[in-house]
Every structure is written in structure tokens, then in C-alpha cells.
Image (tube, rainbow, N blue to C red; front, side):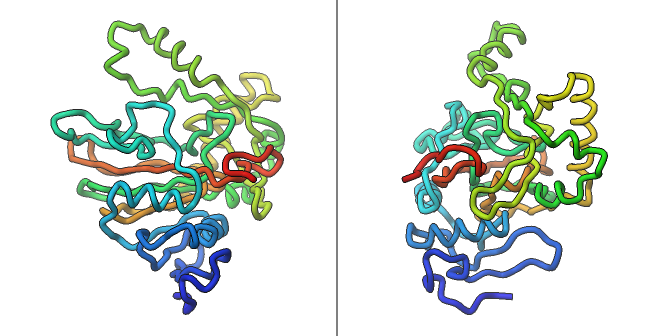
Length: 307
């Protein structure tokens, strides 16, 4: 169904936006609004919508790189990713996933995110919101898959409850992608250098959303490497069981890609993974992460954009 309200009826409420709700049991909501029309006056309403529904999609349109950044800026502070080789050559706010040369030069990194994760989980201040805009979509079903971590926690088997009452350790070094500057380095040297740049961090295994107080499981196979309160062998076994339950097909929502169809989601509430497509076919997407001015979880000090 669609809202009958004007998109500018209230700039602070999700009711300000015209939406189409999915079938019962499906994740997310579609905003019937051109992303180019989203400005700072609509930012609070759009943030409220993504906090409530976790995933938001938009109609297909032809966004320029500047318009994509402007959309992200309406939501908060655009992220500049810590590794330069992912940057768009003219706009460092844009994280490029691409196997298409531009003017004969490699731009961005191909085949990103093909494992379950949440963005920047391996930093003390993870990334709250992510926007992704598919630019070139290969044949077949290219999609981003999502898992609702509120639902997973609610349905978690009793036998696993003791393992989510504490903190988990997260590392990025096992996901490092080799660059030209790594030629002549050993694997050990590469891991040591990247590990020094991204030392392991810990976060609560269950976090509390800073807006509505939902409890959310906060682990991922991509970055979570240990449960802090347990011996290594017990931790490894428990994490394997947790990941297997989290990633059960019944929990997975697939959001097919369409060129120019923007996706926006809340990293506190969802884990995601790139899926489908072929490494041999041209493919490109642009991501802009957003800091929303709130702590990532409720018991943390206030973060970026906070007053």
C-alpha cells in the first residue's frame, strides 16, 4: 500500500514519505521518491524510516556521482573509506566496486563483500548506514542478501544463549585484498602490516539500537573471530554454530539489483553479502557510507555529527 501523505508533510517523521510496504514477512520498504529529491529537510524522515524498516529501496533513476553524495549528505556525514584504492578517482566519498577500467586504468576493487558482514565492524566506530547504487549489472541475478539480526536473536536456540552474553572480537586482516604495492611481500608481512592498520576490536555480542532500543545480534562470519569470555576451542565451535544458524536460508532476504536502483540500510540491524553475477562480466556499483550522528549502540558515547 502507498501513503497518501505529501512527502514534505513532516520532515521529522517517517510518515512524511510516500512508501510501499512489502508483503507480510518480507524485509524492507520502498520509498516512492526520486533520490535526487531527498535533501536535508527530508533527511530526518528518511533516517526514521530506515531505523524502523532496516532496509529502504528507491525507484530506478540516473544519479550522477555528485547526486549520490548529496543524497548521502542529506542523511548525515558521508564516509571516506580508510583504503584509498577503493575510492572513486574524483570523489573519495564513493567506494567503488568494479571490474571495469576507466580510461584504461583500474578503478576501485572487484568482487567486494562476498561474505556475510556488516560495514566497518572491525573499527571502534562501525558504519551506521550504507547506500549502494548499482551502475553496471551483469546478467543473471545479481543481488545483495540481507539477514535481520533482530529476528535471528529472537529465534536463537536456547543452547546458544550463553554464547551471546558478552563481547566478541572482530578483525579485518583476513579479508584484505592484494594490491600492486604488495609485490615481493610475503603473506606474513602483508597480514602484519594490515593487522597493524586495523587492530582487532571488541563489541557487545548483543547491541541495543540507539533509537528504538531493539536488541540485535552483532556477529558476522566475515569479521567476528572470537567470543571473548570463552576458551579458543569453545569459542570457535560456538561461533560456527552461531553462524550456521544466522545464515540459514530461512533468514536470508535477497534484494535483486537493477541499474540505478538505490539501496539504503542500517548496519546495526542487518548483516549483508554480495551475491550472484560473474567475475567475467562487467559490473560496477558505488557505495557511500553515512555516519548519522548517533552512537552505534546505545551504551556508547555520542559519535559523529553529535551536538
